[in-house]
Image (cartoon, rainbow, N blue to C red; front, side):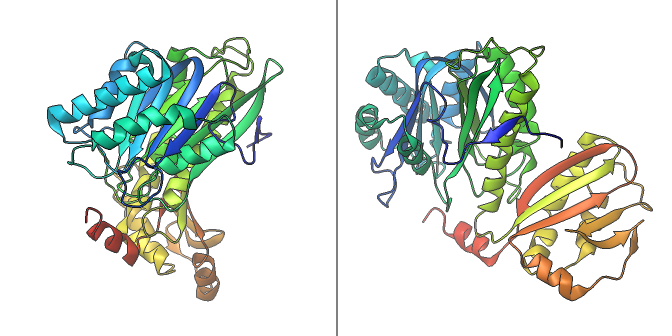
Length: 409
């Protein structure tokens, strides 16, 4: 990998980059008293970009946010609720999403097209706007620029997640410190092409909206689009990035000498959030990291890696600590990509179990001990070309069924 061009900011969050405040509170959408309404605000118009779910049923908040950002716009704020997805809610749902946008704009004294809206939770129920609107009115008074603001926001976006997901790095651009941070939620209905996940990235780098959009899409393809928990793609997924420009570097372009460092930092933040989502998969006990090398192309490697981590049989074998490489080779063979069936090597961690597509005797006890760990590496070398990719997923447990059998009730 070479020398990292960024450093990890321990204890950083979405309020660490210059110009950002965040907060959260409980407005009454969740039955528990956990925060369910959150906001990120930038003190200046931030260059903004977003990527959205590929599900044809797109929730009302996405339609509203898409409109705001259709012209490569700027954002001053993002308002997010959990506990209700405001999806498949018809005209009323869209009216409610617009009301969230308009009330946030009014509470902050900004124009409504500079407010993005996101929602997560149960599909097909109308939002309790008599709770949301008073919550929005209170939120500006709860905004903070310290880590508490970031933590409150992180809590406000969770649904079945067990842990808050946050990542932060700093790097040098034109000799100035630039910070990139992200927060995300997601643990079920998670699948490539954006999963049931919401992600929010803040940075104080100076970069235009159009370039930020391009980079965000590229980075999403090797991070959030390389995770799967259960093969379901949600109606609400969205990743929004905001850049305040307050680091006061020369505006980033593809030719800027520090541009690769910025991309590396953004990729790290997004990959860490993606891994955290996979690790926190509903009922999960293990993170599965699958790396495919030697493929005909990067795209082929991506498809094969995603097929392996998406296999219910592979996921079940990992849960049971069963070194069943047959499940893995079967997934490789059905991924619909070019594979030389005589040259495949498979390792569980560092344990070689298949070489040139032939079984290798291995110590079952050592393999069992390895598979009992909380991170399991599946490494496949097709020995065909230079294509490579890494994907992340989790094991499939009894708890996953229990959680999703009663999610609505």
